[in-house]
Length: 60
Image 1 (spheres, rainbow, N blue to C red):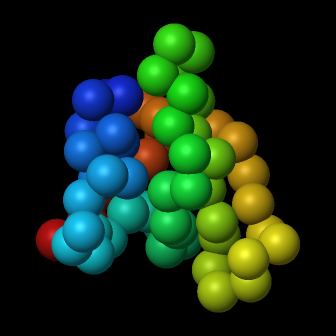
Image 2: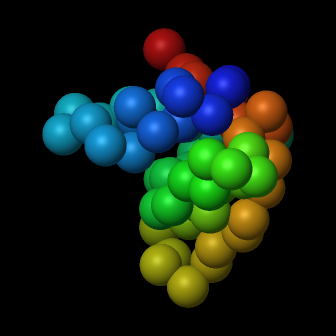
């Protein structure tokens, strides 16, 4: 995924499926300047990771 698409998903009112290495995640923040995104993994709000947006895949 590219940074612009990650920002679009983050700002969207609709729900989009996003995966990180096969695991479902929610985008919580996008750092456009550095190409990084903070994501929540699974259903626990405290389970977050900051990853390069190119590791994120949009699901169908």
